[in-house]
Image (tube, rainbow, N blue to C red; front, side, top):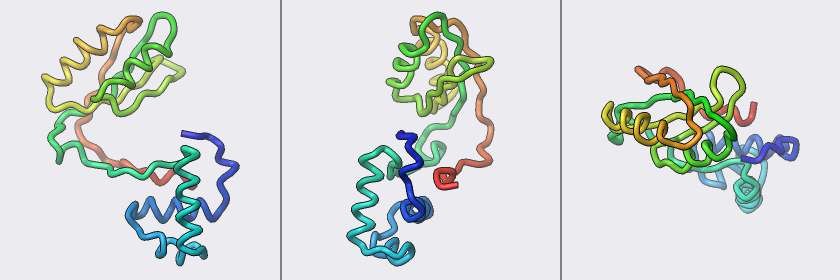
Amino acid sequence: MNTASSSIDAVSKAIIEQLQEDGRRPYAAIGKAVGLSEAAVRQRVQKLLDQGVMQIVAVTDPLTVGFRRQAMVGINVEGDIDPVAESLAALDEVEYVVITAGSFDLLVEIVCEDDDHLLEMINKRIRALPGVRSTESFVYLKLRKQTYTWGTR
């Protein structure tokens, strides 16, 4: 995503907030709420999408679609981190990859069908990547909070 937050004015932030409340909200209703025409909202939304400022996606609860095991995996790498991060990002089960400073070089969130799938991911796919020195897994027991409203604070 683009980090050029200085180019986002108050009206664009208000549009984003409207879409965060309901990603299917009609442009006419958004326009009424933010003081623009439907066409102007449509143009602004397209510009925000084109600039990579936001995405409009359906967010699912993994449990309801057959994925009963989630984990955050801390990974330490030997050598260049970027190729490992790219390889991890290419895996379907990987939802989130971040290069970090601190105890781990990378943090990776994975969503799996069950514990056997989690074991396969860690043992056969993540640890097998060239450059991976060590991993530490943090298995999710219960999700207490997951929001995406931080984009306009």
